[in-house]
Amino acid sequence: VLQRQPPPLRDFLRQTAILDRLSAPLCNAVAEREDSQAVLEQLEAANLFVIPLDHRREWYRYYQLFAGFLRAMLSREEQAGLHRRATRWYEAQGLLSQAIHHALTYGEISGEMAEAERLIGTAVDATLHAGGLQTISAWLAALPDARVRANPDLSIHKASVLILAGDLALAEAYTAAAETAFTQMLVPPERQAVTQATFLLLRGLIALGHRDYRRAVELATAALPGLEAAHPNWRIQALWTIAEAHERTGRITEAIKAFREAQRVGRAVGNPLFTIMVESSLASSLNDHGERQEALAACEEALTHYVDERGYLLPLVGVLFSRMGMLYYEANQLSLSREYHDKGLALTQRLASDYAYHLQTLAVPTLYAQGEIRTALEALEKARRITPQEGLAEWDWFLAYEANFHLKQGDLRFALQWAETAGLSSVEAEIGRASCRERV
Image 1 (tube, one colour):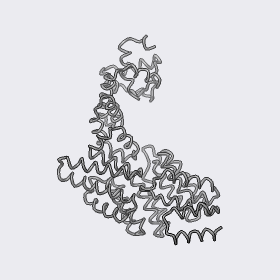
Image 2 (cartoon, rainbow, N blue to C red; image 1 turned 30 degrees about the horizontal axis):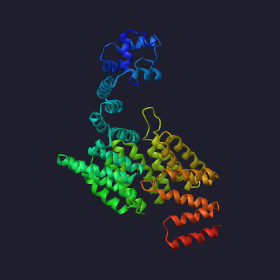
Image 3 (spheres, rainbow, N blue to C red; image 1 turned 180 degrees about the horizontal axis):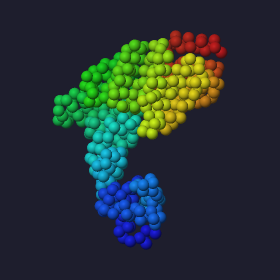
Image 4 (cartoon, rainbow, N blue to C red; image 1 turned 180 degrees about the vertical axis):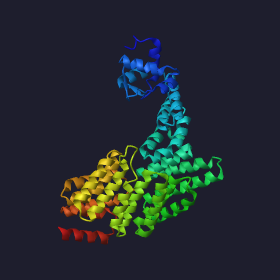
């Protein structure tokens, strides 16, 4: 079929095959021509492997097999030039995610990653606002590691992603690399202050993951003055670190105060990724403070803030639904609890699978209370396997619930094994054994 087409049309097909989606302006830029709209309409009329993607016939795509066949006909030099032109067109349109995709492909072919690094640095904040943590992680993973470590901004973002993933040792390595790279740069004093504050925050988050709560508060508090309005994303994380450390050490009043300030900052800048997590933690602290109704009201009020342009709830709202499910469980309203947990899981399944399983563990007490014992234990066991022992999640929580439910089932062996491996003293372990025998 291709050989029967005139040479100019064959050239157009080959040159535009690198594109996932086709539009006339984009094809004009990539193929360096002016007649792409007419060519696309000609291809559609001739049924030559193109599919229209909208009723206005502005965007098209090739059949996947045909596109792969066409790309195989391009030399590496041709591919590099085409991807570079696509990068520049997408950047000019403000479509940075697509620009980064082509810039990374260009870099893989040519070995030149400077453009991809620049675009990633430009796009990080907006991508975080949209909840694209996995996207940022994939971008950074696609860059040569030596270049990431040599770039203090990229190293900072890499460390942040690793902290959230629970890989604290590697996060510390990238934080150290960022500090080293930064000392070798000449920067104005105002940037120096902000970057040093960011290093303090990263080390505060790492301390929180290591359960060193006093150190976490010290470092995050020291970071706050350097993280004023110009860097609200980092400021939210610093406030959350302080609040979470207070909450885990029983200083609930201080935790609520810090969570509320983090919520205020998050709402002001419209950052759903961190603000929803803050609001879920705020509800937990309010409940710990004996204010369950206020905790529920806080969740219900928060739900009104997180919808997309079509009016649908954002996937991260599942965190709030699951928190509400826990609150209804504590009120022994099991049907409502299950309803909200199911809503939360349905939303978070659109996120990373590991995250969905982690959130599902919040429903475990409700599942157990409703007699779904096997489902509850399987969810806990999977969460324990996929959650790192060190990290921002409280890993011991899974173990404690798992041991408690096994004990309720009369599984004395599991409970005793847990008591012996949980770091208890000999006296505490003996008390645990006695309690187990009494229950049995």
